[in-house]
Image (tube, rainbow, N blue to C red; front, side, top):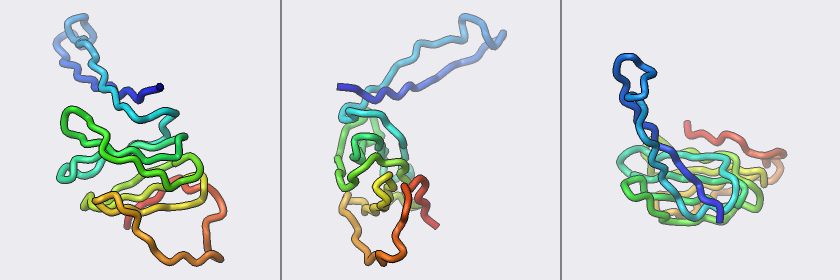
Length: 133
């Protein structure tokens, strides 16, 4: 199983800047659940403490951002790779857009928010950057 590895870099620089003493060991954080390439990562505002990742496995994976990173939810509504995820400013909603030409909007309890779509004005290509205005 492939795993997504986030590297946290924390370097303390002393004089001279690029000396051996300035280097610190990198401690990776391994997130389980991702079994394919990752296209996008979005972090919610601090209040909700969530991080969403998605990619070629057609799933949005939600993790708690407080230590340790724990998988909270898998959302499998897309039928093609997911290209982008974004949270609203309050952090109580997020949207995912994918190569299946769909945008899915979820609430803070990970429930899909349904809305009426006009099929004549539907996206004709992949969604790359959903944003909240």
